[in-house]
Length: 368
Ligand SMILES: Nc1nc2c(ncn2[C@@H]2O[C@H](COP(=O)(O)OP(=O)(O)OP(=O)(O)O)[C@@H](O)[C@H]2O)c(=O)[nH]1
Ligand SMILES: C[S@@+](CC[C@H](N)C(=O)[O-])C[C@H]1O[C@@H](n2cnc3c(N)ncnc32)[C@H](O)[C@@H]1O
Ligand code: SF4
Ligand code: SF4
Image (tube, rainbow, N blue to C red; front, side):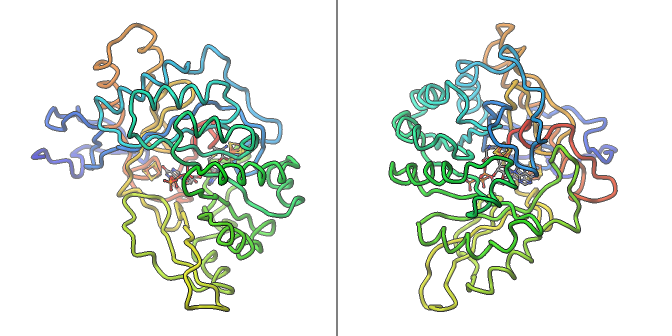
């Protein structure tokens, strides 16, 4: 591409989108932004509702849920995926939330997408509640793989973190998804100081012995209670040190390809000759990966968010409902992504920097 998609020649405030130049035609049909990144990975939130109340994500009392009319219908979601794949170069779909398993039409959405796009990787990020009953139907509908969030193997700690006593149900869900062959199952865990940080090794031992890929996530400032501090967050370096007590980690030679997780091969200290699995560390705070970001997000009510930390959103739902054609919807989506901030919703990285402003929405309402 000949257009200069390097630094924008405009004043750019801390939020990074002031006085944007128009998107040049030479940018082509894809979801290109001002910094030359191309979003090929679509994440759609199916609902803002959830049956857990993880302390780093939701307030104890829940949120003011969207009403049914505000949320995209199954048909609208399937159409948006079509537009993304056919017009905008999207190559992967992630369904998330809130908790996507609470959406009644989940299997129909997956089947609708699969019918139109037989080869599109379609994955789900879920808390696993109810997965024991739904794994088969989701697999049959065409789901490719699944990530399950689970921060502790101790029932009391799990209940403290999620404010619900449902660990056994989550474990059942993971087992069933595994039995159904829902791809390589990845387990997401956020470590919280003084709560589950001493479980790092135990979680990894459990994951490698079951054949799951565990990823530790640095906590980000996206909680409803605004309780995040940089000092209190467990960093990737700390996670490494905790794991190195029992395991030897060596860099995974596979290409990262824009993935948030940096992967490591795992060997037990007691048998250092044998690779027993892989662990990922998602260091959004201390080792940001924004320069290679390939994501575009749609919220449950149909707004494009170009960055997890964006302060601007672009509505597609009303355009869809006004009878607009696919190309008009695609055009609005392209414009929204052209304005994508460089990093962390700003013109520089820095979760916890003085000029960082936490988005109004929580992680659950954005679609994590
Ligand atoms: N900074 C940042 N973090 C993200 C973004 N997307 C996801 N994350 C973090 O990465 C975690 C894991 O996301 P998942 O939905 O499990 O999937 P993934 O790691 O992106 O993708 P796969 O490895 O392909 O399954 C989330 O819980 C977030 O904490 C993003 O766009 N920006
Ligand atoms: C918002 S949830 C939505 C999907 C599903 N409910 C789940 O928990 O997997 C997606 C992911 O975001 C992560 N998450 C939520 N709040 C976070 C935060 N403040 N920092 C880092 N990750 C967070 C969760 O651990 C989960 O893996
Ligand atoms: S992280 Fe997922 S499961 Fe936990 S409260 Fe947020 S949306 Fe619900
Ligand atoms: S913070 Fe924004 S730019 Fe950085 S990786 Fe996440 S979505 Fe992409």
